[in-house]
Length: 500
Image 1: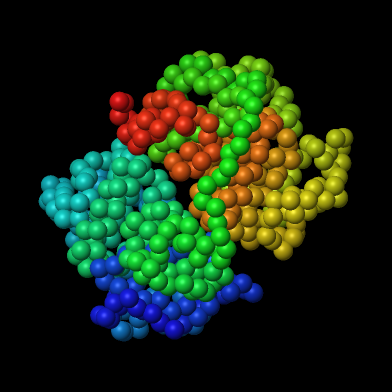
Image 2: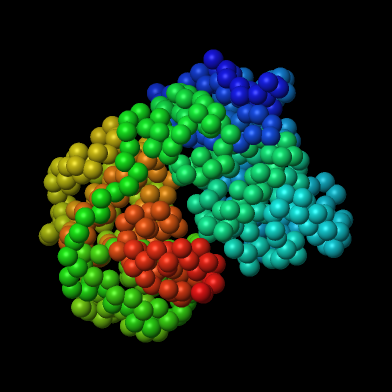
């Protein structure tokens, strides 16, 4: 059944859309209206079918059955270019910009006749468009000098310049500071006031309630709820509608005794790092927060042994960095849970047993031969204990949803009994249920380890961390207790490099 929250015809009507990949039914008979001047939030757990549905609307691939109607006329998209020409564009999490070009050049790139326009005229056009929608940016700036929030504005301007009527935002606030998030929401208001239709995909329920006019929820490839925002009274109600059960939005951290230092950093400098000092103890979680690209990757590389410190000292488990990483043990030392869970953390085309062996192989080959039978048994145990939904250990990593793959990685790394855990964006892109489980696993790990949590999600940092270190341009703007409300209120400014 098609539903609409407007008396005027919808800009887009998805009618009985279905899509399967082999035996997996990603979308089943989905009908949905997208209305001009409104924000439709699209929610669902990982694997619910959100990405598949939006990929069909944006021309990435066609539906198996059903119809896509624009202004009542059926359209068949062969490519994203077809969708853009019809007025439908998508702002992805990973931006597609030419870093060496200016803002204006990126916005006009690929437009007919743009190569003969003078730079000042290009910049004037883009500046006028940016001001119309409240997207504050310097059109002459080189993209590689911009913050992540500014780069996102360039992506939005590219679609607006092409006169897109429907804009799809996929987890748009994942890389933004709180201030940049507020600016984005103001821009969304400007867009809807000018008749643009917005689809907003997010796992952040507070933001969904803040910006949406209507909320559609997918579960197992089907629309299970489609309601006006006004009918949803709280974040807890929205979470329960999404998951199908009551969800606790806060975790009980409990008290864990802080013990000996496991990581000591003093005056660390060099590539991307500026005079960092920090001590992590067993029994605590320290959250490193900041917009991506401010030195977090370099810090992680040093702590996990991928890059030697150029300046200062780093001690791990009471050993100097060079000594510690000379012959590191596979067990009882450092575990790394990378942000890139399908690429760096795992190999997509290997089965789950081989993926478990990626960091534990020495534990199953004490002499010459690999005890694959034991590795298979351990993989089955990890799947069971960490509630990894999969066909079995013979499944390939690429077949798992993001949440289930993350749980497999956690199970593998915790099997190594680490004393230092480095977790990068551990819940990014995960649904409520998967996030809930990952958080509990990290909190439980404090009993035997110190956890360095690198995250851009302030709620995650404040839910889990004992202390918070705000990072900007390779240095710590401040390090403070997560219970210090005054300091917490200043995080947004600190993330933008502004000291109080």
